[in-house]
Amino acid sequence: MRTDMYELTMLRAALADGTAERRCRFEVFTRRLPSWRRYGVLAGTGRFLEQLAAFRFSSAELGFLLERGIVDEPTAAYLENYRFNGTISGLAEGEVYFPGTPLLSVVGTFAEAVVLETLVLSVLNFDSAVAAAASRMTSAAGTRPCLDMGARRTHEDAALAAARAAVVGGFTGTSNLAAGALWEIPTIGTAAHAFTLLHDNEEQAFASQVAAFGPGTTLLVDTYDIPLGVRRAIEVAGSELGAVRIDSGDLGILAREVRAQLDAAGATETKITVTSDLDEYAIASLSSAPVDSFGVGTRLVTGSGAPTCSMVYKLAAREAADGSMVPVAKASAGKPSVGGFKRLFREVDDQGRASADLVAIGDEASVASFVPSQPARDLTVTYVRDGEIDESHLGAGGLRRAAEHHRSARDELPLTALRLSSGEPALPVRTATL
Image (cartoon, rainbow, N blue to C red; front, side, top):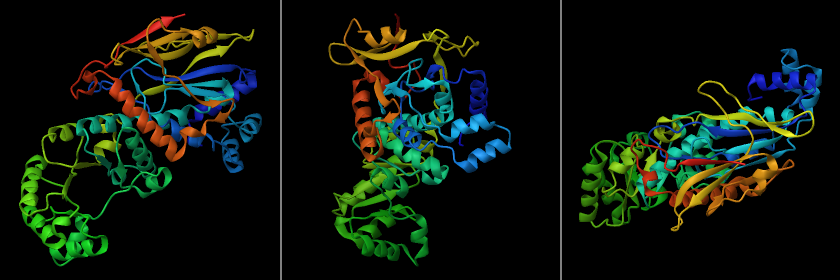
């Protein structure tokens, strides 16, 4: 039911005119990247598959649709027994992508594929936006971990999705307990300023936290005066203090001052973590600062300026009266699409560095048998075959697989892809019409 009404009205009309059972290929793509990004990151396919497995209409929901006149009895009967029995393929989760390339294809009858549009796009658009932001942040951070602290900055369901997508983009932990439980993401968090303010003084708050969690905990030192807070933290926890967190001020200057203070007190192993409205630019500006980890909230869960990827779900081929598959495409001004079956390859140079993306376009048989003329990696992964979901993409295992894939895919890109300044997409896209 978290879908757009026009999917069900199209289904109703197609069932009535006899076109609902025509075999169709829908595909997901985006026409552009944000001007300040050189690549996108596909994320959310594992989460989409988890929802696809439970994509059903209850009797109460069908009653609502009938009462509102959105569906008629034949449409309700179809939806009562709805199961997706087609094939879904596309880029591996975590793969980088560029404008105009096919990201996901859904092949099945019109009836079973059209009703998935909102589910596909709502998951992929949000998750991919967060993963792209996370990828730029982790790239800027280098080997220093980035941690998701965005649950309080977005819708409660979006917080779960964002935590998962952040891991695809390279984050190593989340403050969100539900996300940690669902996908086995390490969870992080100790105390907010409220805990310090609860106590009569800062020393009591620090002593309480150390008593509960040991000296390896992280103490928040900027509630009052940072140098004094650091001194009190060391007095309470000793040189075994795990970390201090700074959540305000000029983080670069403060990190250097705190590092010097910790080292002078013998707490040379104590880490420094920083928070406070970070994004990829702020993280990059701290590249030479003695910061050990970054906690990111608002800018992560809002896609760091690009909260959606503008992905669309368009019909690219459909069954003709004679049973053959024919390409179909929009010719709308400014919003054209390209018909036909497609397959995406990534060309690589002699050093194994990605040099271009190649889209093969043609009929189903020619695309399936196409072999590029130069070294290239086939980017197509099959997620669902004849209605059967490949469960290796689900759950915690699927998330780990996606994060690993993203690391390798990003490492394959030219170094210009990692620039934070505006510019063209990192790879050109070529087409081969078969």
